[in-house]
Image 1 (tube, each protein chain N blue to C red):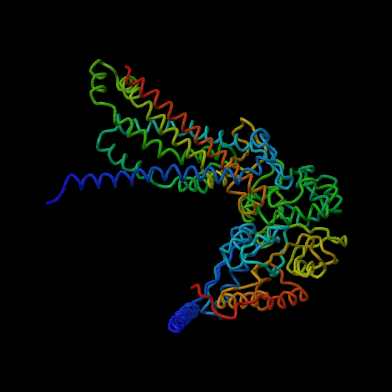
Image 2 (image 1 turned 90 degrees about the horizontal axis):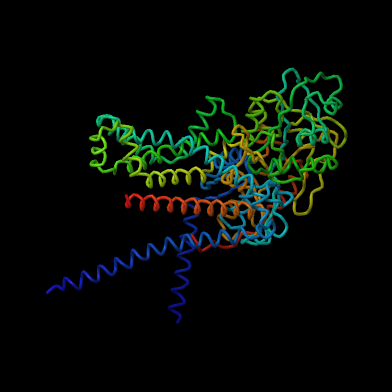
Length: 289
Length: 348
């Protein structure tokens, strides 16, 4: 006789352990990264103190490492990228879900999903090698922002479309039945319904833009100490500095580059936490109405 | 007891034989580091492998710093590096004592893009002031003083430099810190605190590209890249007060007038001699003095011997300078100091 119940219990237990182990592993890896990386960054924090975050003189021969200008550059280029990418992405997503006839929308959806699967560096290189020379963009915050925008449009579009697609047909039909135009219907039902998901999609794009290295390193200009709102000025960002200087860096310089990585890591986590909070709040509000 | 003993010997012998057999089937040497010496390594590897069909050599580039780190971690069999280990770092290398082998000299050219000016002369203090952005016009009296009789245009100077950390930057800034002590304030290193109104390019080729496409531009680039991009380059004033053009010959001349330490470390920057080009860099191959793998160790010695002897003839074609004879002999002699384990290693 086979003890079906007993066997199932064993299987369930094993599965439970395995999945719990996998989950624990994620936390463990993340924790280990944070610990070891911070440890290797300690010498520069010891030397510079808070000055690492509040000054912007970066002179390896002097053992002076102030990252403020690079933090600014990262934030500024990522902001330019998001500002440029979001309207395009949302427009594309809305077009595919609400405007385009199915015979056009379906291939478009596949195309964008395909593009979202392509590593962003491919778009970045295209921007660097083709777009930037074509429009004579030079090397500046703006060029980096534009390249980053190109890199994140597919992912934001793809995620937004999926979120928008989940708007209940009943809501939309209701709005249209009340005499709403297509835009009024979108504004009244689709956008409120998908607000949380859209913020999530944008934040994911923002995270990608902030962490992008090679494409940014190639076009940002690698100028030191640039804290300016002038988008046409050359600047520098944290990932670009790491990519450019790692190969030849020694001792404290290396530690400073690792400290940049730690800073980037921390900022990304904060951005994600804010995104989660916004998503949760809008989800709650959505349930309330 | 005796039986076990015998079995052990047989097992060890078997392993040794497989190790040897493995070696005979193909030995692979891996190196990484200096991008300056990469064109030479590639040319030399190609020639060397023609006469040593059982040896495969890979050279990965990645920068001198990376090469030294890889060697210290024993990830590679040899490193290419434009500068030695920092004091203390060499002692941390996992494979024990190391040896430096100089393999080439390379002039760093000061390339410029200035229509109508085919001959430009610059001294170290002038270079320091240009690259620090103290002089911003081509017809500045300081530049004019270096170029009597030359009509210089009233054009803005655009300084281009490396965006990435680089041995070329290290050598160029080290030269200025030594030869223009009073004027140069940015110190020396693979990355220095360049003024923000300088243009940054990726790699020597990237910087050469900026010079090529920008009127009024000036930059330091490896001579081979300056030539490959068809750039004009300046004559630089040497210690003897002569303005010298960067060539393989003037870089070799720099090698004649240098002090070489017993461990074959030296600097060819700002060397003595009227014919010496003052901004001359050098690069070493760094290896461990004790090689535990017999086949690999021997292959490494053969390759080093090739780089230092027959390989030197390849250098001038790719715009590098061969080692001066005295240094070459010292380096060749040092190859014998690499001790290779008498028996094959048991690890395959």
